[in-house]
Length: 394
Ligand code: NAD
Ligand code: MG
Image (tube, rainbow, N blue to C red; front, side, top):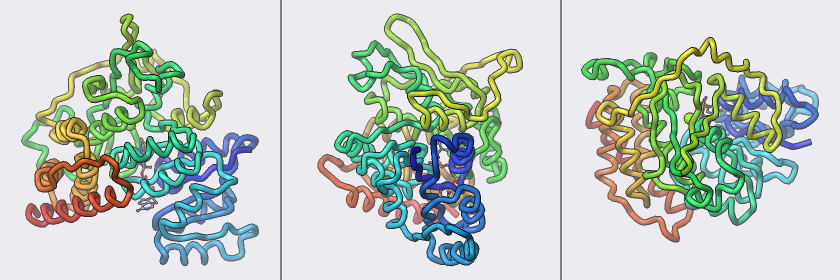
């Protein structure tokens, strides 16, 4: 029986993870569930999945959770703060940690899980963007397993040979083809983008996700973050990753080999497939996902990405090539800009403008030999700068 910690249990990925977990009570048990502020939902999840620990990061919400669970038999121990998240990521009774917190807030517990040698099921791409070198080193040092949950990266993992970490060139890979839906505004007239509302940006055509990643998909910053994520996970660089717009989201990504073969992974757009893959790996287990009906899909389309329409994608490629602190600055500025857009403090094109302005204001520094505190300081400075730019624009 494998003990599982679900970081970000109340979110879109967290809920899908618990759905898969509940299908295999003989294999998995929830040891710890965590959330930021949603005490009601975490309480309901605790009643259903009966974990030993529940972490509510926000102390006020933690008190509310405690009230909600009063009288429950085998009530979980309630922890709070980032320390609580780190603690449940490193428990000896936990084998797998689902890293499904949104944003750089997921970095500390994800790193704690990696340092403790867990199987890290990585949905929280932002932690690799902010601290890729640190996280990959922690995985190598502890012997942790890092399995991608992001559908594209999970697809690539499935299409690569088991020894891909020897180097993609050594296993005959020419390049990775990272698919992107193009989001809801792929075909909108450019002059209408300034009128986009948060509701329109969050209405993704093929995936049902949290609000931040939905906006990231609409700006294609999500694909930019994923390019950086792919470089770390598969030990490659941006010259070997091509973004392919594929509106149906049926092919989740592809790997092109030297001999002309292209391997793809297909499936209905439902995150329970990559979650079940990574939880069952190397075995295959039921995910509850409806089997793909190719006759219903009927056609698959592909387009080149439009860097003029999606400046966030260009900024992410530039940051990936620059390296050093640039990806961490990109990520922090984007988190602030997306939150400001969702609060209607800046317009949709303002997201890219704030990110670009922040990158210009905080010149790239080297991260060689630097630790977590340095990166968190960069993250904090980039957030302050981005907040300033939001105020100037708003
Ligand atoms: P979501 O907004 O639905 O859920 C986020 C979760 O994180 C919630 O449980 C919330 O309580 C928790 N959280 C938020 N802020 C926190 C903080 N400061 N400290 C601790 N916990 C905090 O997000 P989501 O869509 O489930 O995405 C989660 C992660 O998975 C993101 O990194 C996203 O990029 C990635 N991802 C999501 C999908 C998807 O389909 N939703 C697909 C691929 C990757
Ligand atoms: Mg993805």
